Length: 191
Image (tube, rainbow, N blue to C red):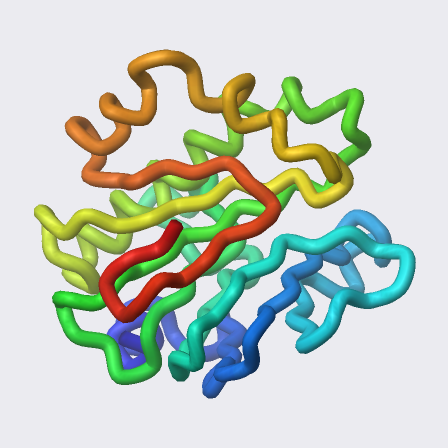
């Protein structure tokens, strides 16, 4: 999948992490904390004093591609909203899962301000991947919205309203999640 993404967007607008085969992948969005100097960072262990999105890995070789600013500029020279990046099995086939990630590193009291925007960012990125034939139009993909500073896992029911989970799957072919801890079950399923 990496080659298809590079071919469409150009390598200068992307950051890649290849060979993520450790048991816990810790993601941190440092954009706000570093005033744009650093973006998404991946750690093998939880860093001190920073909450993370944790992806539990059952020993798969995983890769990730993160989108730099201006990656998705359209023909009108505008950049649509998009998420942080996408994870996939390194030797990706159409049968494997694809996981789009959006991390909102905001204070817990402010998370509700970002609910709609986060969902729009996921929908937009998935739509672009379908339009550019990186993933097929009917492929069901996973997406997760994370608020790492919200250590409790209770924001899912606030973010994903009743019936919305089914609506996301029916309308966008997206298994939407909202958690700070994901578990990859195998090459086709994520919990």
